[in-house]
Image 1 (cartoon, rainbow, N blue to C red):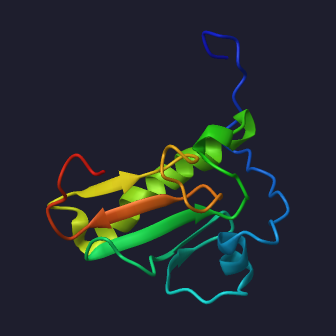
Image 2: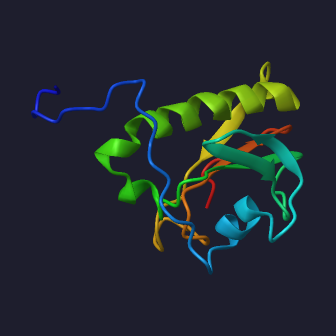
Length: 134
């Protein structure tokens, strides 16, 4: 239990997959209806190269469970969210960003710049990235 009384799921609890959303481009990629250049896949997540890369390394990591945005996470998604973050840093290292670093971006909803309503992590690297980003 947290200080506010929220009971978090046990680490062995895997999230239940919600049905994929028919018009979601990332759900179509998960189902194999749209091809992608896969970097990683397991039962919970998929990573693939961005079609319009903003850096030499630009990989998208998505949960297979359809979650609209980071602001739509539920308590049952805590374990999945942690696994996504851990996998993001692993992928950055595998893509050659371990020594010089990477940028991990999660845009949320319209004002946050989210263009696909499916939670995703941008993994960017391979060059010095300026700040502010936009």
